Length: 529
Image (tube, rainbow, N blue to C red; front, side, top):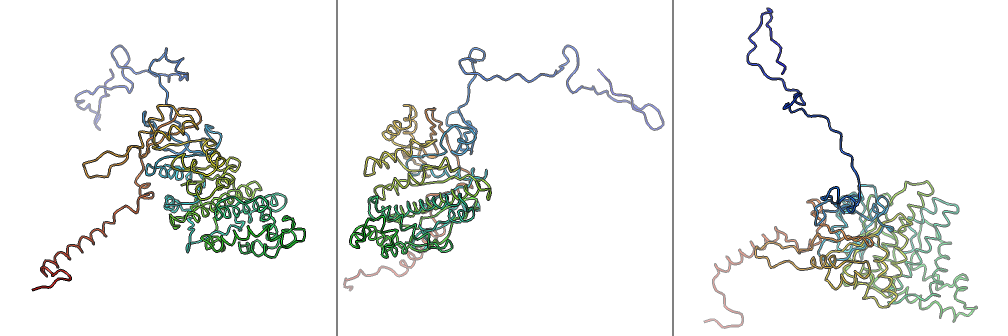
């Protein structure tokens, strides 16, 4: 043991050393019983399957929780953090082959809350969320908090000109050359599909094939004679049909007979008049009120001002918003390909999918055409509805098959609480085990009969099962933060206004006191003594 050195004063005389303090080396003493701590090399790590490792270490266990993407919540059984979103699982983790998500669940269990979390997390990584048709609204406050753009659509609020080429037209003019012509042709196709969708909604059935040819010729005629700075309007389509230029007459096979021409175009003419003079005219007959800003960090098209009973206008507004938003995505990628803008990824949210599906027969074709090519567009999407029965309610077998294809093509399928029968139907599409069906079915039960007087939450709120292909599902529990709770409350109409309640109680108290002072009053229509 070492001893402390002797201390001397300034005169050189030895000072009283006092009690000796033992000196302890930082790693202990050498020799037996010294507590010497040696240097240890870190152990070598090996990765093996449970079949190989169980004999060496019987307590080895792996975690089935992916850690790539937006943090979603905790694994319901292990407590491990679960991360995931369609874009990161497609680009980084390579878990899925299609960057899309399809979510099903009963109302009030947190579907839009989970998508809101994905939206916030993806924005932090540079992805641009596009909420194309916010019905409640569920996402407008979140987009505003992120510094994004919120566009309101509805009667007296704002409109969308479906003939406006928008960002795609501006990008085609900026790019020029052969690439610009290709983009112009794509713009023409999107405008044609959107006008055909409006006609389908008004009629309640799809357009005939020869009518689409006539409409395409009319749009070509208008585009060649309209400056980009002044987009055409739906009344211009009616004017061209009335005039009957040679390009339009050629596709009607009128052979110079005015009566044959009118017979060919009058049904389309009447449907367009129904759009302009009917419930859709105010919203789609005027210039676009606010164009989408392609440089915004997030975009939300708010259609919550449209009444619940106005199903035609709701479906038309959603389809117009999707067409305009996806056109903005295509324009952004075209500019990036030409070296005129940075490459950006997008994440679209298509909520309450059941509403446009039920608007008119054949509308599923338009949704399918607008959303099928998301993988080639650098676009992830989330489609949200309640049950698979939303697809079964469609009128034709072909429409039902196409709507089921939304689920089959989705890279991720997320289930909130659903009844057992509907889970079994979903299991025939995506492949669910008996245990997974029972687990998700248990989340659809209502809360118990609480006696505390507090607001009891349903047992399935915030619980989700994530399915990817034939892999076992990942059950998670989502706990929202205070910031998320302030931004996202789908029950705002049911939140009591404390100040209003206090005012009502004070008014009732004053009325009772006044009645007590005045005494009993005679009943109306009775004689008093």
